[in-house]
Image (cartoon, rainbow, N blue to C red; front, side, top):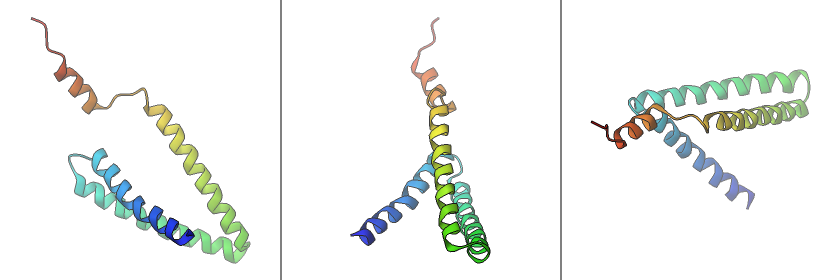
Length: 105
């Protein structure tokens, strides 16, 4: 059951991330995809490097603790960024709103 759950979650993440990137970079989706691939490769490299250093120099438990701390920091960053962006409108929303309101003569 855990393998099924892990597979379901891990197969949905790239689709959700690709959708988010293409919505964020609507005029250049190919560049957004390249940025996404670069970010993933960098994260894999840094995770392997720091995880290996922690495992060799401290312990395997330190590797798991550091991973949990990074996960917590990412979750806090995500929550803070969502709260900050709730009240702000995007340029696309402003243009749509301006087009929807007819100008008075």
